[in-house]
Image 1 (tube, rainbow over the protein chains, first blue to last red):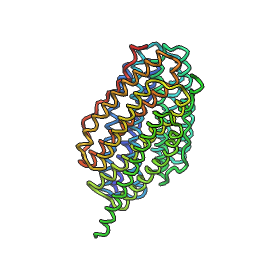
Image 2 (spheres, helix red, strand yellow):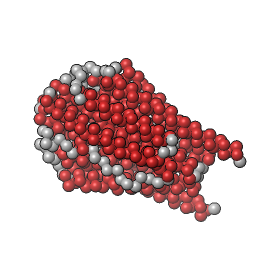
Image 3 (cartoon, rainbow over the protein chains, first blue to last red):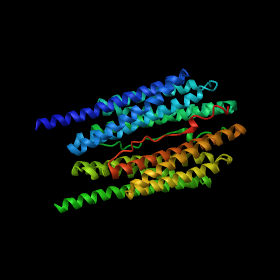
Image 4 (spheres, one colour):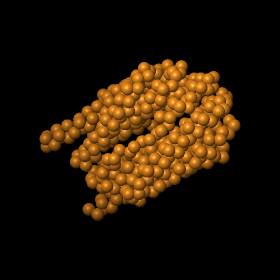
Length: 234
Length: 234
């Protein structure tokens, strides 16, 4: 039944295109949130917050499409993995965009306060997170399981930069308690960026699963050092 | 073919029992994390961190079970929704437990520092989050769509308590900069608890979807006020 097969392929392609569009949107949102922070651009930040609903709509589309494909086509093997992975990846992308929108929201507060020095390191962290998101989405959409797996190391790098930044912000607050308010927001934005790295890693693992059918057994060693530091600083 | 039908029911029941077990485990983890914070109990905190892998194993079980059911049974209608919802709910429960484990990890640092007053409010926030998680899981497992929907309001209450606590911690840090380090960890734990409320709300929405087949159209108005406050405090 070539007609049915063809139509099934078209549905899977639609799902994949939906993910690609959603991923591109999340990338744009994250890039804009970082730009808004760097340039203290409240208009841009407001646009990021507003556009978050477009990513949510993308997730709803993927959810509906996957349930439709599952119900009407009952896919198996590779195709089933593609559909199940799409369902999970859309959730991860939605969270990445959500964290970007939250960073934009906090930048509105920061723009009403004097600039603080650790912002430079925060922007660097943001760029690292953005690169990772881009590369992970590329590897997912190009079915490159090996590349996806190798990208997980970059999340470790992101965690290390985050931990150093957390220390930097803490020191800065203690040296000048008038910066406590802006620095608190910086801390949360930094944490958001670190978590974007975690979601990117989840996508990398789903890319691997989708292609190979295997889950990543090796437990990723999380070294979020910031939870452990600080005791000697107070 | 009664045999096949019966076996299918048994598989769905296994999925449901897996979710119930996983949910119970996450509740226990969260309760223990709060207790560890309240009693400055580092042994208990270490146990919470260690047991997080049990929740991860629960998620892997649910993932494998759902893919198996989808591949072998090709469920439709109610049954398909049950399977798709299980896949998503297990992800939400995993994140709740993960946030509880992170709170436990931070309590190890706090136990090396002098106690700070806002801990009392933090414990209150933790208890609210725990109650919400319990009630949401109950409503999911008992297929109570109306109750699940009504619980979303409790997340708003949690957000309000979180915002007040954020303000309290900020003020406390400014009055006594020596408390900046412990207070920073308190802020992150508070944020974790607030996010646990968001995941509970996601489960409530999945409970509604599973029973009714409808997604919650009405966009939940998020009032995470803490992102907007602080400008007048520095």
